Amino acid sequence: MGSIIEMMVFLAASAILTVYSIREDIQKHRSTLLATEGLNEAVIADALGSWASENYSTLLTRYTQSGNPSLPAPTLADLQAAGNLKQAYRAGPFWGGTYTIQLAMLPAGCTAQAGNCHVSWVFYPSLPYTRNGTPDVVGAAQIALAGSANGSQFGYSSTSNPQTISGINGAWTASNPLTGTPAATILATNGPSADGNSLYIRRDGSLTWTGSQNVNGVDLHNVGSIDAQGTIAAPAVSASNVAVSNAVLSPGTLYVQNAAGNTPAPIDTGAATVHGNAVVNGTLAIANTGVPRGWCSSPPGTTNLYANADGSGQILSCVGNQLIPVSGPAPRYQYYNVTYGTYVPAPPCSSGGSPQILLVPQAFWIDSTAVLNAYVSGTGPWTVYLTDGSYADIGAQGVVETYCAY
Image (cartoon, rainbow, N blue to C red; front, side, top):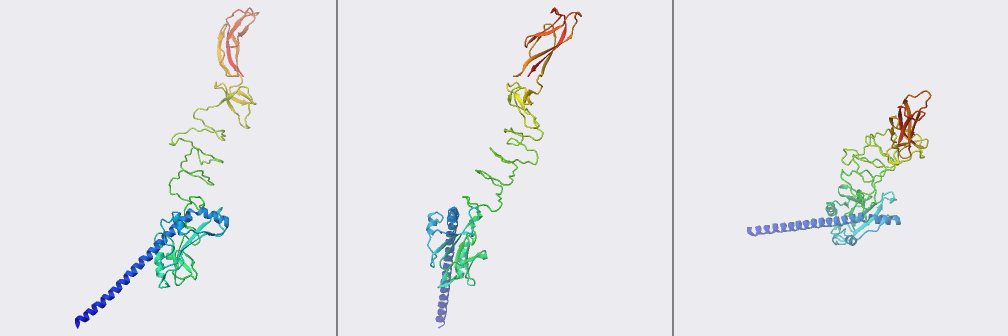
């Protein structure tokens, strides 16, 4: 009798354990199923976000043309065909219904010119998650939590507030899109009133920056034109061509140096105006463009300098609208001590000048009734003659000055 009772107790305990194990297996299978659904929905939401970002320019054009903030939404097949969804997915969740996608351009009244338009999207199953025909908020929470594990923004509606979808940990809220606003509605979004992709710089340039940017000290390569409305500040600027339409401002001396920054570098410019002093530590080269006695003009308050066009190095100054040598209109070239028959060479005059000579007798003696003749022959070089009235050499001495007349 005792053995039969023991056997009955053992069988009853085994049955209880079997039922418990079956329940645990079912619960484990259910949790796995819910997590898999959440991950699948996260993949679709991520593909939808990528598609919206890549097609933003087209969506903005449609909105601009129609003025309707509601935008045509892609299907799962569209996402797969575009390459955003890597494989085919069921059209809806395992408990029934279909996946729904909605797009809108926000905020209301935004414009492409202002750059304040954003694509807002929502993705949700058309039926709430139910268990035995009753909305299961706990299961919906498991699905939303699994979907949010990869960074997607998932939420669900609760029994106490079914008309509102709340993000995980209450991060955001949105209106329940299902008819009747049932509990256990699951929804993913990139933001109820903004485009999550607006956090990033768009490659097509269709979104403008709304604040100052910090690129963390990295380089920018292959940049086209840069139009700045403010200051461009840098310890070193290297450019093959620099176009300045207004002014170059420097708090002190502006240096033009070689690439190593250790010696001055050559500079080639057009017309330049210096309002202060110009200090030249090297050679000052002036173009050979002037002709003595040629016409010229200087701006008010200034005097223009030229170099003789013959390349002789003679410097000319604009005086009274004529180019005159800076040494004067008849610059002296050389002095010579001369006597009768002295040979005097002609000065090497620059172009436009003619050689001239001045003879001054200094030491001589003649009879009081005689005549002193002091003259030269030739047009340069010359021969000096100091004679009496009979044109005889009287042994006189003199000085000759040669010069060029312009």
